[in-house]
Length: 179
Image (cartoon, rainbow, N blue to C red; front, side):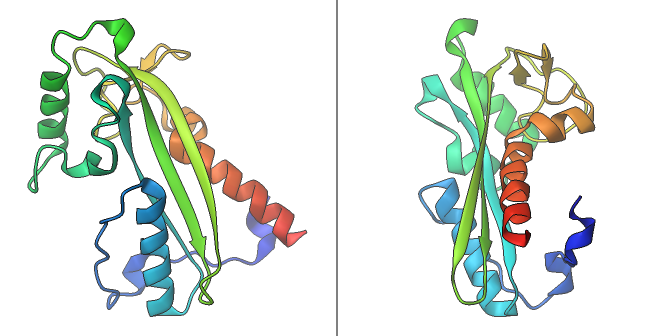
């Protein structure tokens, strides 16, 4: 259990003067590192940041690092899902492979960092299913569960998702560092 490690977790809301960090990297890792490094410099604290998104095989990895704004600067989950489905029109189920990717970076005030990555393979459905989650969750089918990310109970999704896998690696590293 991590409760014995004497760690205080704060959100960005605890630091209202932290400037917005532009996510202009070419990879999820670059964006997560930039966010962690800039916030750490500004706050003089150890910072954990992530960047994540959906990569669709047949679309050459799109939407990728642009997942949140795939349909433009005023994108919504619904507009992003509509564009994704439009871009996959005519693509058969067996060619709709995709993966959620997560890069998690821990950065210390001295600039040293550690990174942890998680990947969740699945496929993109032809229409949304489920009401839980956000983003592309209603379109992303986990073949082992037979459910979309929007149909999975949070305790299962948090364990098997790309973020869950990245955080499990972080937790394992943290326990080793603290022992």
